[in-house]
Length: 242
Image (tube, rainbow, N blue to C red; front, top):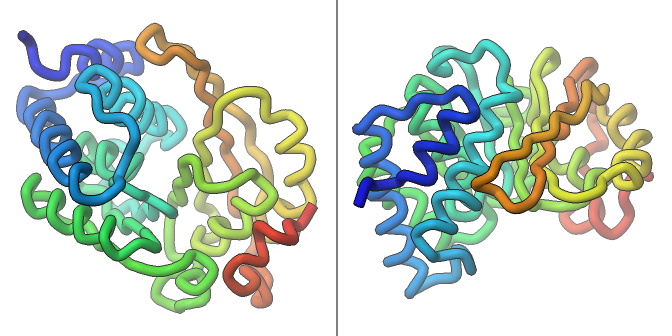
């Protein structure tokens, strides 16, 4: 059987041509993910075909919103609430020069991230354990990134408060969504403006490998985030700026 065939064919539809070495890295990533998932809860999706489509390929759709990023040289990217490294690590595999920060609140998941980074031989990746509301106030991370990514983290009004503070002015937030998000976006307009953002648009992605249509919500960082944001942990989701 050809390894990672679903991922390979889906990537080609996105205009991405994976090398044999990259496909081997994804194969290793899959095996380690399933092995570690027996010990800690990383994902409920563990089938070989499902992981290729719903995790790896879904992560690579973000490349369509990264513009002319090439191999990622000189670009700083933070994946907020990364979990098992998605979408950050699949993007790092295909853009090896990307400077990647993986932010994860759960220490056990962070140990998996450190392990898989070492096994895959990836350089230029930092794993940070903590809450977004706290790390976004740290000068090492606040307004330092060209791209801020979020996948299945929160609804948009809370999400922009958890993510936009990391983005440098001139950078972008790319949020992965599914389904009808019109009402969600409408309720987030105030938060986007207050936090220094401007909605650029929503890119729809339909692939036969993915049962549901995917959406990439793109928000440009056009002004600095006011110093009072983000609010303390838990507040953005309890009392979103909507």
